[in-house]
Amino acid sequence: MEFKIIGQFSLTDVAAWWGAVVATAIFIWDVIKWIKSGPRIVFTASANMLIIGDPIREGKTYVSVKATNIGTQATTLSNLGMLFYKSKWNRLNNKQDKAMIITNPGIPHPIPHILEPGRVWDGLILQNEEVENMAKDGILEAALYCSHARKPLRARIKLSHNKSLQRTADSRR
Image 1 (cartoon, rainbow, N blue to C red):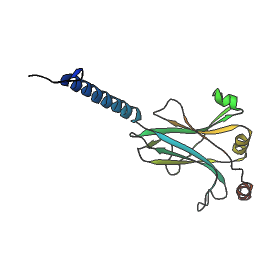
Image 2 (tube, rainbow, N blue to C red):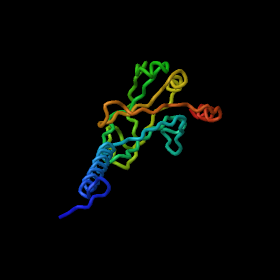
Image 3 (tube, rainbow, N blue to C red):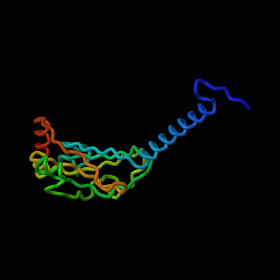
Image 4 (cartoon, rainbow, N blue to C red):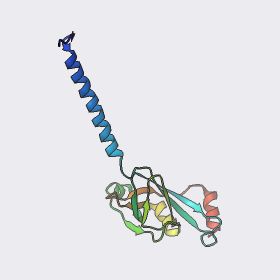
């Protein structure tokens, strides 16, 4: 069997290079799939939330937290807390001035909670005067502890600067 030469390369060389390129592309794709597999949680916090239609919680202001699993595997939400830093320097060095645990934040899904892929978990933190002062005086973050991560997921708690919203919230307390 005789192979033709294309330029300086034989057809065997071209086939070998083509196989190497395809194998490398498949390997890179498998690495990307492996990196993106597992639980991936999007965690957000929204301050100044009022609850309507629940007589027990009506008239109080809350920080609403939400965790959405956009990954491929489930994870267990083990704890919800807050971390307070007096300065940006302390936040940068991860030296919290105060760490808090929120008891029973999940309604109707209490913690610990298994968060399946494609599911959402909601929680509430009472936005009292202490929480508002911490958010104004430094950096306040909600911290969600999950079984798949060594460090908590964090979401900054920022108060609205809209005075009318704050007045409405204050008048309902």
